[in-house]
Each structure stands twice: as C-alpha cells, then as structure tokens.
Length: 140
Image (cartoon, rainbow, N blue to C red):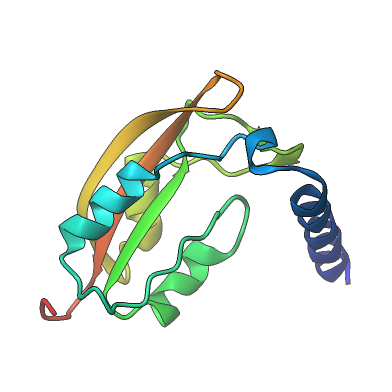
C-alpha cells in the first residue's frame, strides 16, 4: 500500500506544480528544445512517427521502455553532476554508462552527450542525453 500512497503524493505534487507555476517559474523550460530536436532528427524517423517527450525524474519509464518502445528511444535525464532534486522531489541521476547498462537487455546505444542546461533562473543543470535503437530490429 505504501507504494500506491507514494505515487498518489507524487501525482498531487506535480499537479500542484503545473497548476500554480508558469513555464518561466520552472527549471526545465527551454525556448527551443534543440538537443531533443537534434536527437529526433538524427533518428531519421518519419515526420508521422509517434514521439513522446517525457520528464523521467523518478519514474518507471526506463523499466517499461523495453516492453513499450518499438524502434527508437531518446532520453534526457539529469547526469551524475546534475541536481539531486527537481521541484523539491528527489530524482535519479544517470551517467551514460548507467543508462546503457539499464537498457542493455532491450536496446543498443546510438549516441550519448552531456549537456549543461541554463534554467530560466540562470543556473546550470547537467543532463545526459542518449539515443538507443531497439535491439534486433531493422532500420525503419
């Protein structure tokens, strides 16, 4: 039951953040998400491809990706040098090696970069961005 209660509390927390703060009041706002756009372009998928941009934080996204993603996976997450919390909640940080190890069963790494994101508050947050291709699939 504790796990369900934790999930409910996180849901309430994020709903409050989104209801009470403008984009300029949260650290993840970018005028143009250029790194994500570059990774999507590099994947060379159809313009009709289904793409979802998810803030992973402390989610189960990586655990579920192997079952859900059919072709490509692009992840931007806090690096080991990034913040330990986001909007007051603890987050999980990933190095390139940690992401690769976490996804090794289902995905092959295409490329990874580390990038410093400048927040609307003029602070720096270090991110790891990686792209992966589903293992055992032909290029589509």
